[in-house]
Image 1: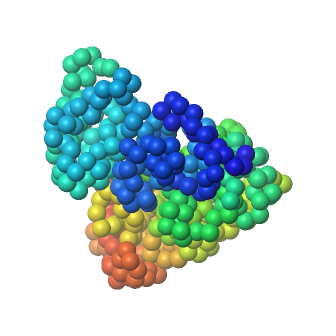
Image 2: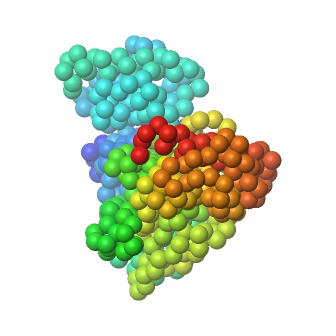
Amino acid sequence: MSNEFYALTVNGIRHEVRDAWAGESLLYVLRERLGLPGTKGACEQGECGSCTVLMDGEAVCSCLVMAATATNADIVTVEGLSHDGEPTDVQQTFVAQGAVQCGFCTPGLIVAVHHLLDRNPNPSELEIKEAISGNICRCTGYGRIFAAVAEVRDQRRDVGGR
Amino acid sequence: MTVINAVSLREAMQALRDHPGARLVQGGTDLMVEVNFNRAAVNDVVALRQVNELRRWHVDDGAGNGAGDGAGDGTNTVRIGAGVPYAEMERAPLSDLVPALAQAARTVGSPQIRAAGSLGGNLGTCSPAGDGLPVLSALDATVHLQSIDSEREMSVHDFMVGVKKNARRPDEVIVAVTLPIVAGFQGYAKVGTRNAMVISAASACLVHDARAGTVRLALGAVGPTVVRARRAEAWLAREASLRGAVSLDDATAREFGRRAADECTPIDDHRSTAAYRRHAVAVLAERLVLRARDHVAGGAR
């Protein structure tokens, strides 16, 4: 397949990408061509995690995905985590716990935490730290973030998982 | 620029033949950094992300059963597709089969990077700091290459030819590596400026082959390609007892580290200095051989 245009499936919706340079990163295409600016870009070299999205269920750095190679992938961005227009439990708990300061790293962290809790409903503190080791926050010192993740874990356990 | 999304190995090889000079991309964690920072003049790209054949691995027994890649000398081997992500190497069952590879995989970038990065990418980029490469060197891995009309395999030592240079022909795809399943301690250790999310300033992989009575040591980021400390290995085989268990005293371990440091050729660069890297190699080699000794003493056979 070559690509005068290509199509991406993002948050369950098929988007056609036209007149784009084929080397563009998924991060760039999401933000600048598909109008999905929730995913943030900072380092553009896979160090900071602010561009984290789900691709076929795996958390990846969208800055390191050539968008035109992701034509068969199921892509979920931070905008696609909620299905009812309300903030997810992870988002609500980040707010309640004060895990958000400047907020730039928050979308990537929210995606990474959803990814963690969906595959490991009962993570230890070490597993939480490992799961978000690729998401850099320069404001919070991580304390409130760890607390928020632990609280969501416990909430979900109390309601029998969701 | 054209991106060709191959959906089979055959399609990828044909695309490489049809588009001379095309770049191969698997996970994108190396190529996209070049692209994002305008370091690469990328023309055509053949993407392997959708080639499922490259994402499989299997064990061959020493009789050459399995899919036919066994060494045929009684050594069981594992053949790992070039596109298998590090995330899969970190976990059982691969982590039980090749512990050093799992340890190295866990030190690669972040979970996001490990979901994308692969041995094919590590070999294709052939950076001396590639975390998987000392493991492949210490295990004397075989690299499998295929083009639309040829197929060959070569020792990883012949494959890595220089800084970001390898023996792959432009029309070839790195399809897999084969590693022996070795009884005995395996360890990987690296030094950087912090614990997580760091590219090696120096790294080392030590493999104890309990049956053969040998210890093999490969060093990363301290030479143009991975360095095998063969003189230190031979010295240790004379000075220590390596059959079954590793038996040596602390002074021998220290001297092993010192000799390993003599065999590397580090440089000063933005990540570290030659002097520090040489020091780090001595510490890492000593530490790993002591772990090999204590591993057996701990009763884990």
